[in-house]
Length: 578
Image (cartoon, rainbow, N blue to C red; front, side, top):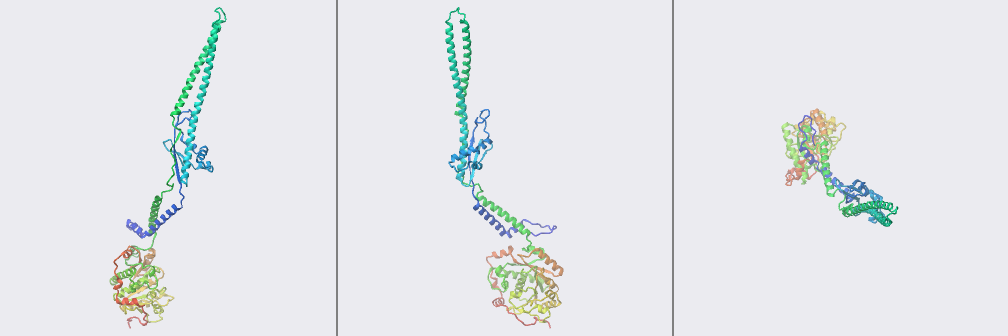
């Protein structure tokens, strides 16, 4: 784990720690990745694809709707509103030819927006049917273009009609004026034929000339208006001929081939990123918050001692009855071979420590139950006996005896009877094939006061007598954090070895064990990391050229594996001084 060091400690979590966290929690990272990919797959399988079809319409300048009837740039915001208006929706439904469609509902679903810095309007429609989306978008675009072009044509037609009417009226007036002029001319000619001395002749000619001047002036004015109207009509016709369409479809709405959602590859890529990111975060948090002493460094920092050996995990199949007693097994499985080799390494280390510390009696304990102390003590005892060392394995765990189950021996008599003064003869069992090199003292019937029995002088005297007889004494005691029995052995033994389960033992528990052992005066000689799942254990399992260590076992060990160890009820302690 990312060990929580003291503020004064210069060591902090480094890149190696984070890489180690990923390595140790790679299954969690892979699980998060798999979960993210599964969710992505479910999302893609359950989502309803939506398709959006878009038509593009260009709007040209037109005097339609202009205040001064000039070619102003179109107001695109207004044109966008026109596209989604009821008349256009009704025309679009007519173009689609489906009377069941609701124009009001369609116009609410159509989206129109203009492209910035251009005169182009995008008309879009979204549907689960790509062909329907394309048809509706094109229908709205066509309806709008037709409406705008029709308005443009109507505008120019109305303007041309007004001018044509004006020209007709002017022409009729000019005709009337021409007739009036002709009539005045005829009257003048008639008056001119009167005698010169006729007093009415000259005044009448003057009146006719004045009237003719008025008619001529009006006729000239009408001719000017006629020319102006004709010029305007010609301009309108020329403008209509040269004017661009008020609107035109730049691109029809094609049938979309890709739905609106993220592409499938993008969804899976996002799932990979999220899964890996979440997995890494979960791995870091899991390791950071994990208080399990799963690494040798954690154990050494907590107990302030060395890890003497690492015992690999044997798996679930070997956690029942005596299957964990691998040193007496002839199994050729890789797990058992690795375990036997691990116990031989542990044996060599402990032999060195015992010789260096001049110790011959050690206590095996743990922080809590189920961490493998009895299995470790039993296998170590057999490993020491294989080298010719005289070993006495004493089961002082009288509350939950396990050694008897491992070796398959009877527990009706044993240590509790001797320490309780029920008998002066210590009951023990010799393991077949080891002569008198490996004896086991069962715990005996469960007493009412096991703690007091272990702390008694009788227990210390018994240990001393066995040591004096030349035996290396291994005492299996209850967990430190469960009872005080292990601490009570401090007067009788030379030190303690702590068995740590790499899967479940927490650092706070080890700190509590260390504190209790220090207070009792019992020296911690080292620790054994049981069920090791670190890189070392995995590296052992990856080996392809394993040696068959089982074949190298002594003949006595093979004989012991073939038969169940027998109990010898001699009734006397070995080589007990008189």
